[in-house]
Length: 326
Image (cartoon, rainbow, N blue to C red):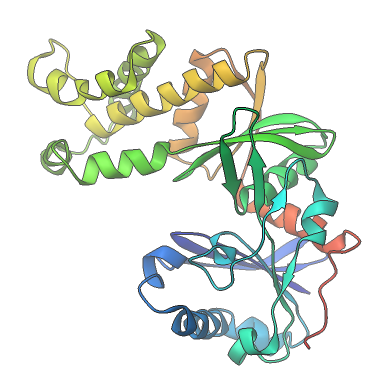
């Protein structure tokens, strides 16, 4: 029996896994490392992380006292429980497994005899000198490709920071982060555009939402500048003959559309992607945007499946076995 944890900036997901199959799952929304733990000092945070994990997983830990805990995500970042050193790309399962960080008894705190480890994340320096990093998406990306029965693909993993990964022969050779989700949150909740979203009525009709999203996509397809297009959220709402019926969907269309424009510049030869996402509006938006930019979606893989397959493969890889507590 294994316990897998995907602990990100905003949410906590845990899975009880037996022979590669998920037996039970736990999700605690709003208990990400930035949303609930960032204000405390590092020493206090470490104790808080240990106590929260013990409480969140209590039934599993009691029933399976020998179950090791393998985590990925922002929990291994500077703001997390421990800051792990990144593995350098290109990297595959063996490299990620070799980079596992194993917690000491002091760091495990109240988790006692349970073995605890966290993946290191991935870093890359592009040829033009830009740097990029990720934590958990390397697990999801490699897991998604393995689940799809492939060894090479271009992947899109939407989120607060959307990740695009190029995997070749089972190794992540290139990736790019696009802050689409972050920018959406800032614009819709702060600044001069935020009142529009607070006062706008929500659109429940999917057709109206998609039509508004497509209006935003249209702006990106035409090739204007993102900063210029963003002002259309305000001006079209006031003056357009056919104003967007759903401003949030319209803003999503602008941002995701410009994201896809840039991806087509970075990967001009790509014709197909794997979409790794939780089913819902975001997944639908990305599928729709990909179609507009001549990218077919070869498969849609649920994030839960991707992360569990990825962690299971890391666990089974030589070098990825979890040590007994020291």
